[in-house]
Structures are given as C-alpha cells and as structure tokens.
Length: 506
Image (tube, helix red, strand yellow):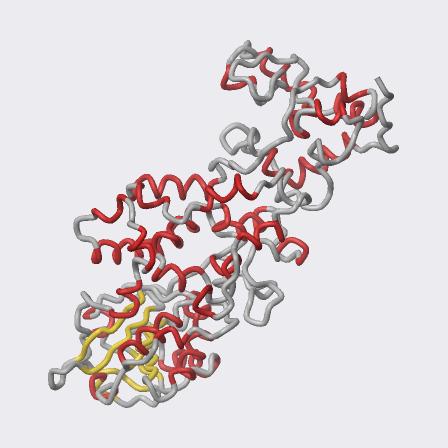
C-alpha cells in the first residue's frame, strides 16, 4: 500500500530534510543538464553567447527526450464508474495531476493546481487522479475542498502510477495526442510538482500550441525560484549555495518567522499583491529568491529592475555587518556550480544548511585592536558586566587544559593584538569587547562615534549577533549554545545603566 508523503512543520524540519527537498529540485536541473550536454563539456564554463539563452530554456519550451505516457488503463470516476483514461484525453492536451488526499505536499500545491486549471480554460483539460490508496470519498473531498475544476478519478489498479513510474505525490504530466493515430506524447513532466511550477506548464503548453510562451508570464506576478530555475539552471544552482537560499530557515531557527519586522528581508515580495504572505511557511516565495532582486517575473514580467538597487534595502547598517556592495557582488556569482562536481556541490549545500558555511561578507572596521583597557574608561558599566561573564574567563578554560598555545583554539578564547596580521600575538585577557565589536583604533582616535565600531544593538540578533556568535559557538564546539538563552544572559551582564562617557582629548 502506498504511504502518503508527510511534510514536517517548519519548526520541526531537520536540516537534512531541507537539503533533501532542495536536491530534489536540483536533481531536475541536473537531469536536464545531462540531457542537453551528454559529454558535460559545457559545465566547464559557458560562453557569453550560451549565457544569453538560459541553459534549460530548450527543455522547458520544447520538451524532448521524454518517454511516451502510458495511458491505456482504466480508472474509477468519483461516481464509481469505470472509464478509459486514453478516451478521456483523446480530444487534446491534458494536465494529469496525480495526488494523494493524505499528502501534505499535495495540500500545499492544490490551490495552485486549481488556478492552473482555470487559466488553461479550453487549452487543456485538468484530470485529477488519486493514488490507489485513497478512498473515493477522500479523493472527492480533496477536489471539492480545493475547488479543482473537472472531475476526479482513482488509480484503482495502480497501473497509472506503476506504468508511468510515478513514485511520489504530487506529480504532473502534461500530455497531448501524438501525430500517430491513437498515440500520445509527454510534453512535460514534473516529478514532484512543486509550488511555482504552474508557469512552466503554461509555457510548455503555449509553445506546443504555437503561441508565445512568454505571454503566459503575468506582469507583477511572483513565481518563485523553482520557476526561474527551470530555465536558468546555472543561476538556480548557484543561488542554492548562497545564504539567500536559507534566509527563511534562519528565522525559524531563531523563532522569528512570524515577526513582520524580520520576515520581509528573508522572503520575496512581502507586502506586494502577489508576494509572500506572512505565515505561509510553505510558500515558494520563502527565502530571498531571484525575484527579490530582479523583480516579479524578472525581465519576462515587464518590471525588470537593477538588482544592485535591491541590496541595501535589507543590507543596511542595522542588519548587516559593514555591508559593502562591491565586495558582496562576487558572492552572488550566478555561474559558480559550473566548476563543481555533484559531490562537492552537495557538501557545500550541506555545510550551508548546517550553519558551517563561511560568512564572507562579515567585516569589522579596519584598524588595530587596543585591548580591554582602552574600553573601560568610557564604558565602565559594560566592562564591569563583561568581567562577571564567561567571556572574560574564556582563556582560563584553555589554560586548565594546557591548550592556551593551540592555534586552533586560541582565536576563540582570546583577542589577537593585530586584526590583520598573519602572525598574531594575543592580549591574554579572554574574549573581550573588540572580539565582538571590532578593532577600536578608529573609534578611540575619533573619540567615539557609531560608524567606526560595530554596535550590537537590539534590532535584529539573527542578522548580526548570531552570525558573530556562531563563528566560535559552533555545533561541534558548543552544542548546547542557544541564541535566545545565551543572548539574554549576555545582555544582563553587559547592561550599562548610564550612557558611555566621551574620552578626554589627548
């Protein structure tokens, strides 16, 4: 008996599950690359001409290389009648939606399938086929609840799923009668079908009907990165190695996914008519996708924008550590996976999901560390709080283990004298102020200020404070570390009852 698929709630989802879900979509991209480039020679760097046409466009618009569907079997209608599937769809193109009424993924995509059926109108029939494990009443209830147009049928003999190798739900096959009498062809297949893919169905159908496929892209409509990635394979896979692709997940880890002050910069299009809706944790617009920078539908949606203009709407001084646009751009390079083998790609993706990936955009102000003594005269209350907390005693924990000279350990237990030098000496005072706030040389020379030191305030711990903390408080080194609990204690230790005094003139 088929087991309906289950989707854990976002707060329960394991990071390995996130990797698996993403790699399902990546698998679709990889298969398409393999079909387009059997020798793999193109993977070593696309030419400028090749990049003008996205790698997967031919597959999306033209299909090709797909096995003919197996449709010569009987189904049971919602009314209990036995019908021939090939007779149901003999008149023209059809969208075959294979689902299970107990599948949470199917519940997730059903509204989109319903809208797709309405938009297709007379161009194609929508046939909803429930898996053999469903009762007819459950299948009817599913279709009625989601207002799917057309009728529902049950794969009673399970021949539809087995002969068409449908191993998961939801799946979608786009079929049409072939030139051969009584034959059919597969125009496109989506195994599994994911939110945002309905646009791909419409574009492939339009191409089959001899219409302009790009006319199916609605102006101002957001679709999500899977829709973009079907054509833009290189860009999509590169996005999967960026922190943008797990932006929404970081909110779940910090239990801030319901906070409107945070969510807008971790999703796509929030506040716009077709953009992300607060609380829709399964939306294809969760995470900072392609359209967050390129606009809804990108250049195809009639509202293409300069992606550089989008960066600093979120990467401002309150939410990023010394963000610099020119330094950031190389890290959103769209063609990085061209030089990566699949195993290397998976390892990098896993490191990103696990929180082990590098954060190359974090940068402190330039300058030398001055040590705790330079801070205490202006920040006496904060310094007193620091002495009462564990950071001040961080070096002692190494000394007890005779590891104070271990270069792999010392950098997270003491403050280096020179923030830039390859050969570093240390102050011997533990994890002090400049370990988290950056070098104080400019700050002291200017007698204070906010643009020459990193102020860790109250605006967004997930964006700044956690990024700093987890550079040392890793799962391997400190598995019990918790942002919420440990940050609250840190604030109590460092809470200063009076504003800092300005230093006297030298």
